[in-house]
Image 1 (cartoon, rainbow, N blue to C red):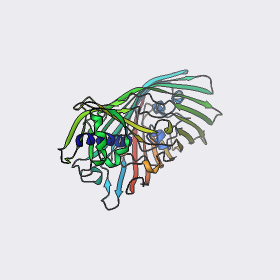
Image 2 (tube, rainbow, N blue to C red):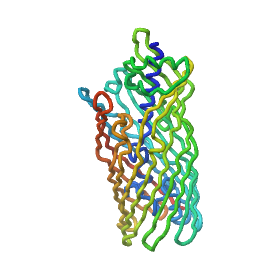
Image 3 (spheres, one colour):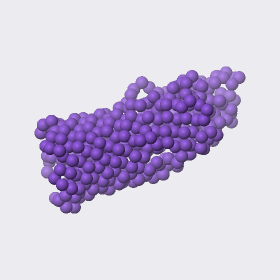
Image 4 (cartoon, one colour):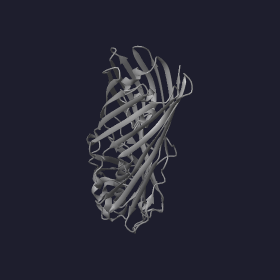
Length: 447
């Protein structure tokens, strides 16, 4: 009974961590800005030319660029600063402070049509707590999480007339996950929703486990041990309302990812000796129907003067349709059978406001600045140290520099001040704080 109960505790624990991995922790799981031109302007990008990052923003704006070919190569760094504390215990600081997100885009444009291909990271985050923190629950092993979501994008933009451009993209999307986690059986007892024997017989003993672990991880910095993929897309338009004012609309479809799964023996479960010997099992973890949400953005760009452009976007993200709960299944390779469990999430839909400006100093230099505000989509009672998607405000800045007619460099920085949430749903209040500083740089070549 000890062995079975431990298994159930460990499986349920995986749900807790995987939920934490599903957040990018900027605008929920989504980046606050794609491409340094957009990021520097607070994430606004729906109604002006922002290079090949338009594939992730509004594909219709690709038609606003110059005729010819363009290649963009970019590198982003996500820098979260996450701390968790509980009364009477030392504060646990995450060692996961730098996550690299490369991107590349190429397009070919003429007077009537633009097409191309790009690879972009859509979101990703990780936290890493040491074996000596209270989150490790005296298991003697570290606790960590890392999620990566990316896309290969095939965009097309068409000029309808002098005022209207339309765009669409077909996106191949992938998601991957690594996890090392510890949790108590008592905390996770209510998550198991069913299963099949023999491993399902572990369920009645769940509450007695002092701790249980689930681990699946690899050494690859760009893809995790559990993987899923699928297809989705985007639609967009840009309307030139007047000489100085353009309006944009884009709609991102919900993804259609397959379940993220490990290899048949790619995950392990373990628990301490409770008088019947320590428990250890290998098997497969499947994250059931994890999806990125649909979103709709409306925006404008106003050329206030020959040197100054002002832009604003309002985005609505449909988290409630994809994050009601986080469901997983563990299939035991050693014992046989499976366990199903769900962690309630109850995310709320999110509204994001992005404001920015670009000032052209001279023919070579452009300065940019912006602000991004979003609500926190996660109710306080569901926020977890491995899932701190609570950031609300971002202050952004950046520049563009034309090295020559063919080559330019753009860079941006985004800082999110500390947000603190207290989760009182457990036996003891858990305080979680999160701030971050993110960077993007891009080299562009036109020919």
